[in-house]
Amino acid sequence: MSTAATSLTVANVCWRWLLPGTVKCLKSSQQPVEGIASVFSSRTSRKSASRAEKDSGAMADGEGYRNPTEVQMSQLVLPCHTNQRGELSVGQLLKWIDTTACLSAERHAGCPCVTASMDDIYFEHTISIGQVVNIKAKVNRAFNSSMEVGIQVTSEDLCSEKQWNVCKALATFVAHRELSKVKLKQITPRTEEEKTEHSVAAERRRMRLVYADTIKDLLANCAIQGDLENRDCCCLVPAEKTRVESVELVLPPHANHQGNTFGGQIMAWMENVATIAASRLCRAHPTLKAIEMFHFRGPSQVGDRLVLKAIVNNAFKHSMEVGVCVEAYRQEAETHRRHINSAFMTFVVLDADDQPRTLPWIRPQPGDGERRYREASARKKIRLDRKYIVSCKQAEMPLSVPWDPSNQVYLSYNNVSSLKMLVAKDNWVLSSEINQVRLYTLEEDKFLSFHMEMLVHVDTNQAFLLLSDLLRRPEWDKHYRSVALVQQVDEDDAIYHVISPVLSGDAKPQDFVILASRRKPCDNGDPYVIAMRSVTLPTHPETPAYRRGETLCSGFCFWREGDQLTKVSYYNQATPGFLNYVTTNVAGLSSEFYTTFKACEQFLLDNRSDLAPSLQTL
Image (cartoon, rainbow, N blue to C red; front, side):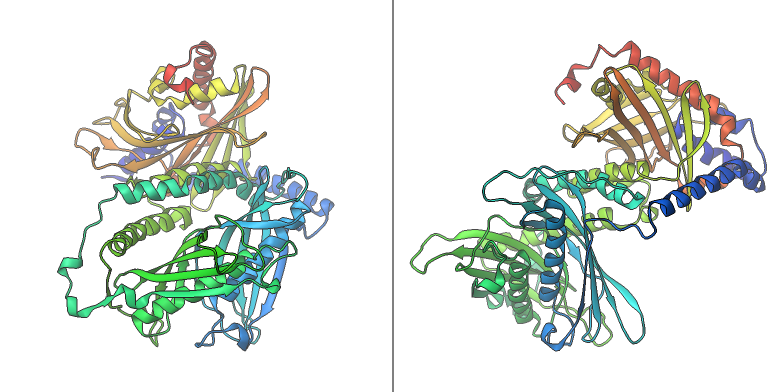
């Protein structure tokens, strides 16, 4: 294929999803690629001026801005903090993390706070004796009585001045007063990072609230292949040999000023029994690599006895999962024990070269042991999908991620959070404005993003519902020949198959498989959101009849500007390979953007009182 043909193909794929009608302009302007420097010259000068204004504004506000909820802790790792390998024990680190995060939460709340949950933690680096642990925590967002606290942990070698990232964590704290109900004040984000975390925190909260049900459904529906029959029984270690039970008495040093046990202390005790269970399987000193979400089901107080139970649920080639349960009781004569917490921890055993060793297989006990064994296999798949989708950088994400029941919650989360992160960028540059319809652009790394904005005299919720229904998109978008609903995942997420018409010069039409995720506002000031990205489905593979197109991140946001007045914004992030093929000034494309966006406005005005019945239930 020639360079010109390749350029035209990629341009058609990408511009179709930026906003329709732009392919025509690209085709009529076949300029050389080296002209790209002059293409963006005007926008570059405006961007420089904009940044200069922002820098001067920051200086006016005071150099070295610091979040008012930020708390920092630095600890020198002493022998009393380390394990048998001379490394900081994860239990001690969890205590420091919890303390720092709690201080940040209480700084914002102005009253005592308790740990409600701690999201998944992946440990990237161990910390040796003599090194310094630096922990930074700040409140990302406050809700009614709970708040999300973001924690960053790094280690520092004082002699070499080297620093390493150890882990990131997200904790939820609940403010508590004895005599009155707490209503937390809202966080006002100032920097781009704060705006991003504030916006995405609402989506993370939504994911936490459905976490237990999601895991339950996935474990019930995922078919996990049994491999016990294929293993040599003489080489299997009975799971019962790894069982650990330990009791701890909660004393005043383990609790806060209200007498409630520190969440970090409970997590440290859990890590201790889990490490013992893992050691009994591998007959070595294991290293903790990951912890699934801690969720505190209830408080414990000074004087409680905590019973901690741990057992290896399953062992894989290079890792093992240990389940830990915590129960509390007050007096020895009590027969009823309160379930305080449960967690699943992943361990590995490293050799002299820090490479994971092969582990022995586990033989579960019949009944509950076999259930835990198979559930551990399911959680491993879920854990890998979640870590990949949620934690990897956007540049590392393929355009189309396979859709699977084990990753649907996290793919939906990534879909919405990616759009929210794009919206929160503070270096958008105004490229053109026609009749109060504005076109903004953003050049960042390998991505070129576009943002259209206009005010429409329609109710915000109605605009959201109308544009949420992709089945009606062909009514105003001429580049949608047909749209079919493939799967209604839940009331907020759906997968569509989109076919676009054949354009002049194309041999066949293009099709897309799109995940559309919609969200109503979490709080006042939040926008309504419709996020879209490509996914792959086994039922809809690429066929010879169509050219498969892909979209990385696109969608709508709606802000209420007044009664029957809505600010409608459309965003699209072009694929990395697209930037090399842009050969025309974006301002020259503004008329095509304008035509399509005005068609969208007319569609909203014509149908503002004619909502689809299926959407009324949202």
